[in-house]
Image 1: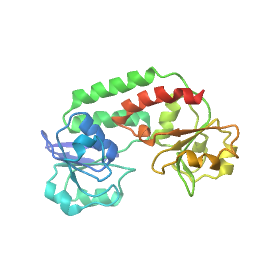
Image 2: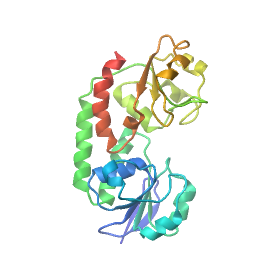
Image 3: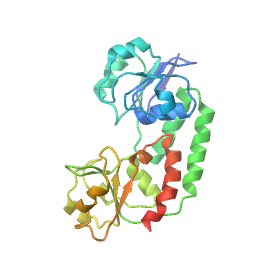
Image 4: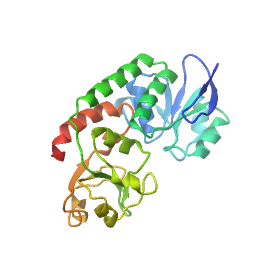
Length: 258
């Protein structure tokens, strides 16, 4: 056994050697499996990638509600949660029985730390180092972008990505400025007037969690004549293993920003 600290500074005692891991966050599950870990025995119903692997892994509820009986039946040695995805109550409930490592991702650097951490926890360190290196090299090859951008993720009310979020950090790394960070909250509700005042060059309409599509363009175009409206694949804004696919994705869509 050894004592470690999670990303929130919480101390926990974990066993050395092979683990039986339950992941409560889709991006964490995907990353563990893409790194080649064979330790994942439980996942949430929202953990759907990689599809060919997750279907053989037991479901233990969702990210906000869990099936405690299913978790106990799996006899995990380690549970991995994420501060934004999972509730404090879930962490506290499970921590009474198992080591619960809580990750926190608010920046691109945090995302790299996450991959490194998962590599250590699942004993796939070399794969984690290689993935981080490949992601960084691929992002470094992208052309520089610029302009004011708002990333809209929800409708009725409109909600945008704000400060201290991974998505904003990613947009800034690509060269954009996110004026929505001046508003209160990490995912503030915004009005058309807020978007007009932001003097946007681009409005990104995400495919998830709300599925924006071409039919929603008319809600914005009459009021944001100087902004280009671009539909983006929201899954490409996940952290973890998806970042490598995201780097290639941004390369393919960068002409949309010209």
